Length: 115
Length: 114
Image (tube, rainbow over all chains, first blue to last red; front, side, top):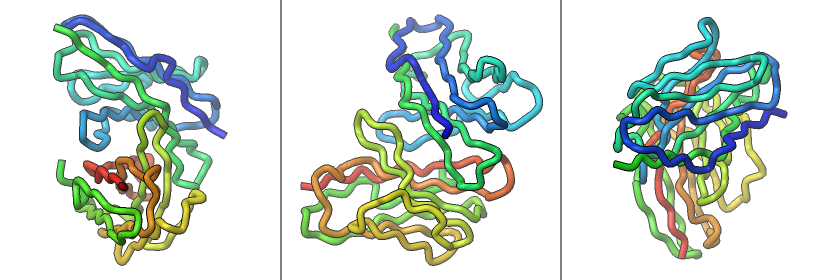
């Protein structure tokens, strides 16, 4: 069964610094990969997704992620963060061979941007 | 973000109450989901409906009862809940078979059981 690991529970960073949030998944079978962001007291908002094609995916709010099949990773990056990027970020994976509709989520990484 | 709406946004109920959570999607999707998000725990998938039929029930206690009257609406009926059921309940929708089954979420209902 698929699993998703977000190694960092919290990432503190100064405003305008670059950031990388790490995500690894367990299986190398064909997958769809997603990053969601959750602001306080809100639902999950889709940041970006990898379905096929180019391994570098660009999303909203200046975020991008790179799919690395050999390392089973899908790390999220932003070259310069803002205070408003402070939120919880969730990586998720679904198995393209599995028709059970399951989206497997990581435990989340809290990005804390300091002035 | 108005693609998926949830009401109420906040709910406080006693253990003997009966209440319902409502979700509505305006995206023309054919699958809907209920998730539970508790503090310090990963998102838990509770129920999945595809074409208005329940296709997934992840061992959820019977005090939670879902209902999907049509492809745009999803309810979660609650009765005799326990304090440990306090959580954020999230609804999502997707279009099965397209767009990688990308799920779009509502804002959630924050439930507190006293």
